Amino acid sequence: MKNQESAISIQNLTKYYGKHKAVDGLSLNVERGDIFGFLGPNGAGKSTTIRSLLGLIAFQEGEAEILGMDVKTHHREILGKIGYMPSEAMFYPSMKVKEVIRFAADMRKLDCTAEAQMLCERLQVDQNKRIEELSLGNRKKVSIVCAMQHKPELFIFDEPTSGLDPLMQAEFFKLIMEYNKQGTTCFLSSHVLSEIKKYCKHAAIIREGKLICTDTVENLTRTNTKRIRMIRDGKEEDFVFKGDLNQLFAGFAGHDIEDIVIEEPELDEIFMHYYEEEAK
Amino acid sequence: MTVLKHEMKINAKSLLIWTLCVGLSCFGCILLYTSMEDSIKGMADPFSDMGVMSQALGMDKLSLATLSGYYATEIAMIHNLLGAMFAAILGTGLLSKEEAGHTSEFLNTFPVSRKSIVLQKYRSLLYNILIFNLVCTAMYLFGFFLMGEEIDGKAMALYHFASFFMQVEVGTICFMISAFAKRNLLGAGLGIAVLFFASDMMCRVVPAIEDLKYVTPFYFANASDIFTEEKLSGSMLAVGAVVTVCAFLIALYRYNKKDLAQ
Image 1 (cartoon, rainbow over the protein chains, first blue to last red):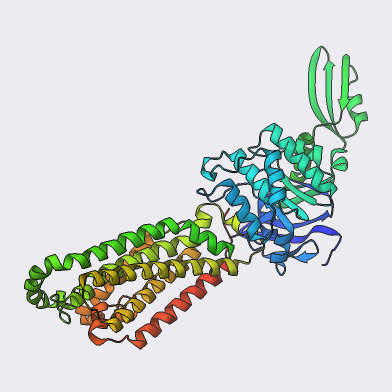
Image 2 (image 1 turned 45 degrees about the horizontal axis):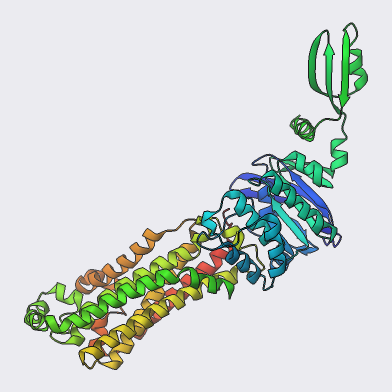
């Protein structure tokens, strides 16, 4: 497996915790330049997949490459080219923000002063505060600066927006778009469906360690699932319909239909649709 | 070098406190010798004749009536025990604190191998122990200078080398434990230091457990033996070196292989 075109290429990745399969034969491909959403509820295996890719935990079966390099044999080279933001943004409590940002740059043997300054200004990060004084949201902002300041080829973000206020979430995605225009690939794990729909080009849905589907966000949302709002026999109804619309209309015979609106469902409804399909 | 610098900075306050506390306490004890000299001289004979207790404390070999004897039997014992405790506290926290403080993901996602992280953290342990010993020894020598006493330079150098080596061994064993732990096992580290100290005293007075001398590094760092014989036990040091190297290699292997907690 040597896929130079892919930013991330995973084949049959399996990770056990004891006897429990946390990730079960996952295969996935993320093209360079993409903004890829990795969707799944808590405990679906998103973080385990990411932590396996980064070498924080060892996986038992399968292969994975990042930027054309095997994650097991080129661990250091890969880490040099990515910016990672963990779901828990934790740093050394006694350090000042500027010391943490400097430490992150020094660990990469880079001078990222200018980029870090720009990011701190845009994200409104107070560099003189100590980490122990920061809220989760402010720690997340420090984590974003540490992940972006060295302008990596690939971002890997694990639930990046939890704890960020809406203004900062918007600024964060604005930054991602800007870096993406310069060629940076973004792999974004989330359970917030709206942000995936709004910002991602492709997405994958994972459940209980297994990949349920992967496609463009546009195709994923183009299903035979429709949201129906109607007034039937004087009663308001609002439901998600899956299947042939002719069957739906046939069921209306003998009923008084005052009004009907058929629209594309929200992404979370589609998400549930894929889950239910998989469960069958 | 970034991890090494970071560890030195993070542990600087602890190093300063331990060095000043131990160094000044022992320095004070040296200066107090003059005021206690007469009463200590009076106690020297009874103390050397207390059977197993005298053996355990080395007072059967050295007399409290001299500053050298007082230093080797009393002050060196305090220095050894507190130095080992400092090394143990430092060693048990170095690797495990990353997982306990949830910073392991931050530290281990930079382009630095785990091997390098372990090596740099271990070097910080060695440097901390070295600085602690250099400053404390300098304070003791200054104490002797102020007292106008001549000290056996060779015995002093051999003892402080052995004491440093003993603390490195204790620190390395605790460092190994740290590689297995997901939380800071401070109590276990301190327990190991005290257990080794007690083992040294016990194996000197109970023939049935004499072989414990090969287990506890306090045995080869015993100042009474060193000030009496003016030499170190090569075989004991070799055992200590093997234990230290093995503990370090196990720590390196374990940390390289382990799944890091979030």
